[in-house]
Image 1 (tube, rainbow, N blue to C red):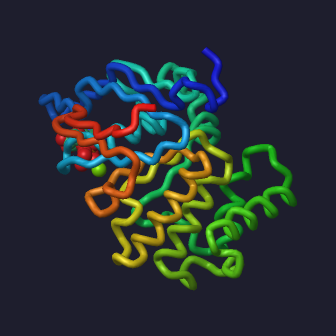
Image 2 (tube, rainbow, N blue to C red):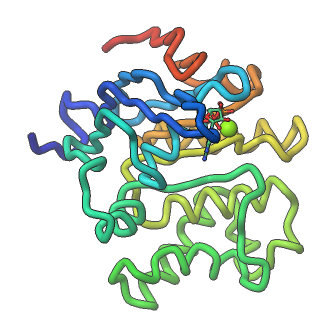
Length: 237
Ligand SMILES: Nc1ncnc2c1ncn2[C@@H]1O[C@H](COP(=O)(O)OP(=O)(O)O)[C@@H](O)[C@H]1O
Ligand SMILES: [Mg+2]
């Protein structure tokens, strides 16, 4: 099953995904049979009560951890059976992560924070610099490239983090509460950046508590007790 992401195949497929953690002797079914298909360019939000499995689902998609059962396919290729030694490369090439607290390196400039994400990608130093500058410019930070995180607002820092997530042209961006640490006005700036990237074809999955964010996405998935309780995939094109 080969797929460049432009055809009818979903860019992400999840089948029968289960993850059971042991809390002492008690098994906790963090994921209890999740099935999901995501198309290229979709902007999806995942909502649900605390403990419903949202972060666990992201860590399975991002290959930060392995499921107990089931499979995750990205661009038609199963990632959940990859060797441990291959996991860092798959993560780097296929996934861009955006976090609530930005997780930028504080001693580096905005440009260097984006550049460093490409360090192991085989791209030359000068090309990395050009790409980092282009990515930052494309989200309105062209005049902030030499600023360090402490010299940037929360919204600007999160935009640097989004540029960094885009650096290796990932199949999917995973964002866990990307607006959780910013004010309402900044939230709208971040959401509009994500919408714009989605419009250009980037696939994005956002975990959020904030219905004002979820309502601006193409599709809202509600999780409960490790399962998908509802999926408002309005357009099933
Ligand atoms: N590393 C872990 N070890 C044990 N239990 C865990 C671990 N990670 C998550 N859990 C449990 O799995 C369930 C789902 O957690 P999580 O995916 O973090 O939910 P959410 O992100 O929706 O709040 C919770 O009951 C949580 O306590
Ligand atoms: Mg969580």
